[in-house]
Image (tube, rainbow over all chains, first blue to last red):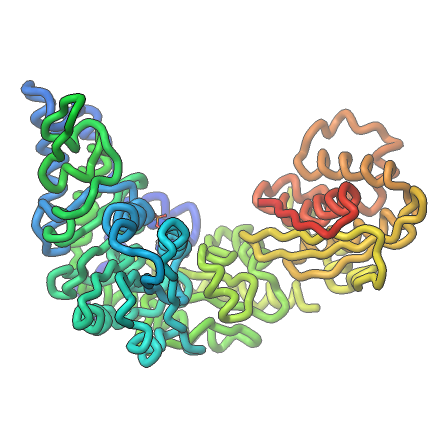
Amino acid sequence: MNENYNVEVIRKDFPILKKSVYLDNGATTQKPEQVIQRLNHYYRNENANVHRGVYKLSQLATEAYEGARSTISRFINCSEKELIFTRGTTESINLTAFSLVEPLVKEGDEILISHMEHHSNIVPWQLVCKRTGALLKVIPVSDSGEIEMDSFETLLSDKTRFLSLTHISNVLGTINPIKEMIESAHQKGIPVLIDGAQAIARTKVDVRELDADFYAFSGHKMYGPTGIGVLYGKKDFLEKMRPYQSGGDMIRRVTFDKTTWNDLPHKFEAGTPDIAGAAALASAVEYLESIGMDNIESYELSLLDYAEKKLKAIEDLHIMGNPEKRAALLSFTMGDAHPHDIAHELSLQNIDVRAGHHCAQPLMNRFNVPATTRASFGMYNTKKEIDILIGALPKIREKFKL
Amino acid sequence: MRDNDLYQELILDHYRNPRNCCSLQHPTHSASGDNPLCGDQLDIYLNVDGDVINEITFEGSGCAVSQASASLMTEHLKGHTIEEALKVFDKVHMMLTGLHPDEVNPEDEKAMGKLKALSGVAEFPMRVKCASLAWHTLKSALKNCEENKISTE
Ligand SMILES: Cc1ncc(COP(=O)(O)O)c(C=O)c1O
C-alpha cells in the first residue's frame, strides 16, 4: 500500500465521521469540507441562473456550472458535449431508456441486463418492455457472485438491442469484466450502458478506454452532494436521441408551430439545473484527484482484504458470493440473527451498516436470502473501525441464537 | 430508552419459541403480509366461530421484532371476539407509534398485558413496521374472508 496515503489527514476533512463508524458508503458517502464549502461559496457569491443573464453574477454561475462539466468530463475522459447532468444514476438510466431505447425496440426485440442489477437498472427496462412488447433477458449470476460469461455470450442474440449492466454490484461487490463484455456486445452492434454508481468513487473510470456507449453515476456516492449525477453518452447516440424532458434551456428556437432542440449537452438538460450541486460535484472530483484514484483503490482493497479475513473467522458468518474481483463492500448473514436485528444492535453501538435487500430483490432471491447485512467501505474508513465492527458481531449472534 | 427495552427478555423468548406458529387446515380467515424492505414475511390464519376467534396462528420469517410481535398477538387474541381484536389493534397501533401515551387509562394498560413488551419499538421509527406487520396482516384477514396480500411498505 502507498505510504503517502494518510487516512487520518483525509478524515480531518470529514468531521461527521466522529459521530459513528460509518460503513454504509454504498448507500451514500460523506462529504468533505471542501464540497460543503463549495456549496456555501456558490450561494454566497455566485448565485444566479445560468446561460441567461448578461450580468456578472449570471456569468459566474454559468462558469461554475460549465466549469464543473469540464472538470468532470476530464475526470472520466469524455468531451463536455457528452456529459449530461442529471439527478443521479436512476435518472441517467431512465433518460437512456426513454430517449434511446424505447424508440429503438419493437415487439420481440430483447433488452439484456444481469441478475445482479439494482432496481434502478431493472425497472426502467421492464417499463420499456411493457410499452413496446420487447423482452427483458437476464444474464445469470453464479454462486460465487459472478456473471456467467458463457450464458452472456449466448444471450447476445440477433434480437438483442441493448445491454445495461452494473460495473460493480452494490450487494456482492463483484467487479464485472465490463470492458470484455462491451467488446462482445459491440461485435454484434449492440450499444451498452454501464451503471457506474458503485464504481465511480472506487476505481479509475475512463469511458473511452472502456468504450462504453453510456455510463451513469451519482454525485452522492462519490463524496459529492445529493441531487446531482451524470450521464455520459457517446455523441453519435446523443445527437440522434429524442429529448427526455422539455422546457427552457433545452431548446434553440420556439414558435407555436415548431421547436428546434439546443445543442448537446443542453438538449437533455431542461429547466434550471442544480448549479450548486454541479459545482460541488466538481469539487468532489478534485478532491478524489488530489488523493488519486489508484491510491484510493488500493487503500480500499487493503481494507476489504482485512475485513474479509476477519469476518470469515467469525463463527456462522457467511459472506455472500466469492468473486475473484471484489470492490470494498460485502454482504453477509450471521447465524440465526436477522439482518435487521444485527443492524439495530450495531446502531446502538454507533456502527452504521445497511440491512435489507439493497434494492436488489432478484439477487436476494437468487441467493435464497430475504435480506443481508452489508458493510461498504470508503476512502476514509480504517482497520480500527473494521475491528470495532468485528468485535461487536459475536455477541449479537449469541443474542439472537434460536 | 435503552436497547433492552426493544429486545426485552419476553420479546427474545417469543422470537426463540414462537407460540401458535403453524398453519391451519381450514381457516375461516387468512392473509399474507410482507415487508419488502426488510424481507419480513407472515401468514396469519384464523378460525372464527360466530364472533369469537377460536384459533389464531401464524407462519413466516423475519427479524426478532416481527416474529415476537406475531407470536404475542396470537397468544393475546385467542378467545377474544373480532370486535375486541380490532380494539386491541388500535391500542397496539397507538403504542407502537407513540401516540397519546398519557391518555391511556390504567385499565386499558392492564388489558394490554404482555403486549406492552412491544412498546420499546416506538423509540425506533425504522422498526415500527417490523412490529406492526402481524397486526396489519390480522386486520386484513378479518376484513376480507378471502386470501389477500398486504404490505407495510
Ligand atoms: C448499483 C447501483 N445502481 C444504481 C443506484 C441508484 O443510484 P441513485 O439512487 O443515486 O440514483 C445505486 C444506489 O444505491 C446503486 O448502488
